[in-house]
Length: 322
Image (tube, rainbow, N blue to C red):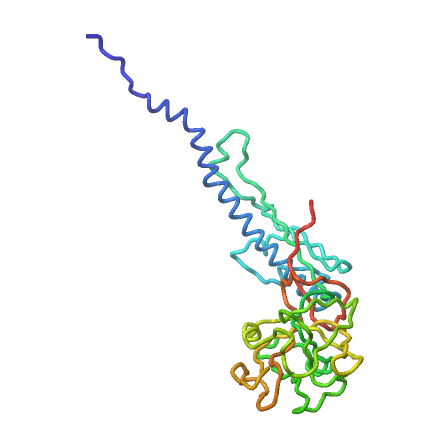
């Protein structure tokens, strides 16, 4: 019988033939995954840095922290986030109120040892990410259906960087309080007619109708709705004058303020009052909490040249097309 030819070494030949595609698949699975991970890390850093610069500019667009645009100093060192450390460029526009931060791995690049074995592919790749943010005063948007007198806002300035902010009580039952100087209509604030406890206000058309009386009927701001706002920051309109009387009162909205709600009393129940804020008992009706200087990421508002001492919004935006 004719002896079969030896097939020893065939597997080595097959392995050699398959080595290149195996390395290619390994490069895709391992090296490309590393590139995506680095890209995500850089993007997080770029977004965080852009927001930090925007926050500094929202506080004071003329301050060194904004004009010097050093997000590494603003955001602080973050060893787990290369995006804070590998800043390629920062562009601040104090006219349009925008900032663009670009991060990359230009110094070292991301190594891909498996993919580099494939002819034509280098041993590292520079990864780049861009983040952008904007800041400004809200001039149009949907707010809680109430308006607070400017005197309350002026007498209780926003809490800025305070670990334990001082809480206030804003009352609207004038039978139990003395109207503060500068309040142009009775009470600290007044409800606004609404079907869902919210109302769209544009400071370009600042006169809005009020709802007389202390009842929230006709505003949809019942206790269940208000309870959901506890601990939340809401935008509220600030009025500085009014016309008319009774059911014909119109408030003139001057600006928006950010108010953190910590308690309220809109009926005879005290179930939702904040014991750490000024008390609201008996015939008192009002909200408890404190004003804030700025908040982040509020997409529902249109920004513009509003009153600078009001609330400011900081939010991420899409980077400009390259």
